[in-house]
Image (cartoon, rainbow, N blue to C red; front, side, top):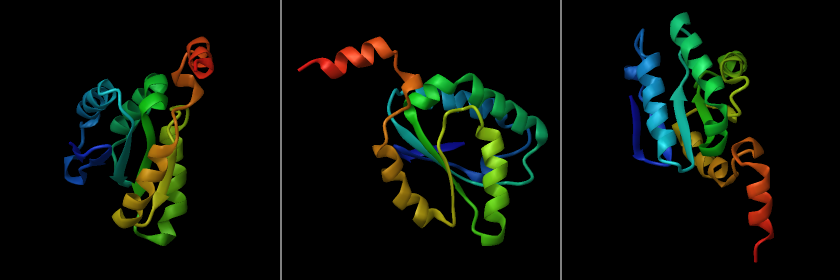
Amino acid sequence: MHDASRFPLVRLRTRAVQPGYAFAWGAEMQRLLALKAPFVIVAHYSADEPADDLRVRSAWLRSNRVALAAYCRGLIVIEPRIEARASTREAVRGMCEGSGVRMVVVSGMRVANELAPVLLKHSGTDLSKPSSISESRRQMP
């Protein structure tokens, strides 16, 4: 379902998004997080995602907030129709709310490819690191 052949750029294959896919999606996301390396996900927006899958994915994103904040540098959503981008942004923001993942809606894969390295340069949020460990590491010579 995820194409990681260009890791750290990971594409969600549009044709893999079928009703009932959310649990398999969650298992694949766990495998991505287990790599313990920063990555960016690129996906085409689908307004007709089944409500059950949307609920499962939203819950998974919230439940895995700390790990996502540590390794997932962003979710780039492709919406080629300019008139639909604002509503797409709101829909995806609702799904990602509370997950700690940066979300951007762009016009196409070319823009996504240009944006991914920019997102990858950002570090994970402070939620991903215990403050005492990160502070001591910053002070070491």
